[in-house]
Amino acid sequence: MKLTYHKTTLANGLRVLSSTLPHTYSVGVGFYISIGSRYEQPAAAGAAHFIEHMLFKGTERRPAPQAIALEIEGHGGLFNASTGQEMTVLWAKMQQAHLPLALDVLADMLRHSLLVPDEVEKERRVILEEISSSQDIPEELVSLALHQVTWPDHPLGWDVAGTPDSVQSQSRESLCQFLLRHYGPLNTVISVAGAVDHSQVVELADRLLGDWQGAAAPGYMAAPGNHAGPQVALINKKVEQTHLALHLPGLPRDHSDRFALNLLNVILGEGMSSRLFLEIRERLGLAYAVDSYISQLADTGVTGVYAAVAPDRALEALSAILAQLQRLCDEPVDEQTLHSAKEFVQGRLLLGLEDTMAVSGWFGRQEALASEALSVEQVIGQVVAVDAETLQRVARQLFQSGHNQLAIVGPHRRRDEARFKALLTNGPLARRAASPLS
Image 1 (tube, rainbow, N blue to C red):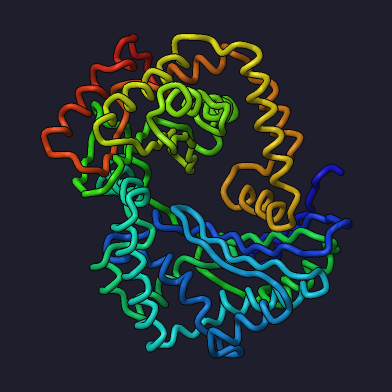
Image 2: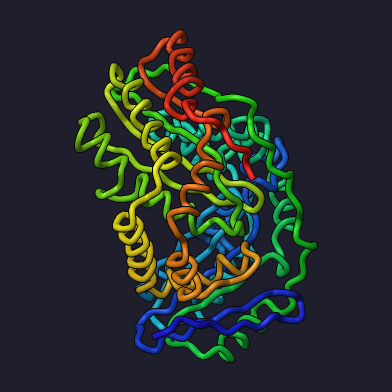
């Protein structure tokens, strides 16, 4: 069955989407709010994440955390929230019959949270522990360091949770002001998926949120340009493995070449048939964990690679990773590899949409962040249309030695930083003439 959705915009600007899946027992309800850490100022770093936590702590009608939880979990449902760089998501998944309750609870949390001072102080301590825990997890620590070196002195480079100082400095009043300024119907999308009727969803949303007013959707600081030369951040830590995280340029969310980059990422480092896995793990035996990923934002993006290796083989592993990136630039991808990558993308997309929350997110996230909401068939059509020549062109534009950043967490001394930087500067990717980024 083809996935489609209906959309209604309420008088206050709130967008309401529904996708009818008549074969399902559950209903997925998501509130997709275009607010995240990149909208924050230094003193307010972590405010969006702090507020997300506080939404669960009590409202006028449900004054305690357990009262909110019981409404959802007491009916066998699931609910949670997340905060990223550009989006906050509040969601619930319940039996279809409990759609009105799910919408009521989420709307109540978003509009009527009390932010009780005692609860603010308790959650402040919880978030400080959350920040501290990332210092003990090398995979998280290297990611944080990589973001900082990729976007220095910019909100995109900050920890979404903020810093200990910024979390300590935020008062209940400042959180309330951030909530009032940044959350409103103009930057919120409600997306519902399941055996639902669109008119019912719109009626419920209008009753619960039709009178919601808020400021205009806020702006954000533009992403900085590319670095002049490779950048390296090294954190000396006594751990058994060296954790390497590499960033190369990526593409903004709506870029026309994003489908080609998705395929490049699959070929490079997604799954056990990817080149990084076959080379770094299977042939060379350098790592248990190695993969690649892409992150696409409104005005920028990155292509990333992560590996955890023995400290004395870290340089060898980095060289092998760079060689695979260079290979994508130098050699056209063969037809069988390209066909397999297209099948991988199509299969993972379709398998991932066999869930009401996934369908809610598919349309809700696109409506909130992208210039248009594409159907599954449109995306697959774009992916299938990519040819080997386009893949090589995009690889050559993005994978350049002068525009990459590396973070390292492991038992390395400061002098090792120069050796890693030299490899980035003079290693495999530097052996070809760089073409300008477009």
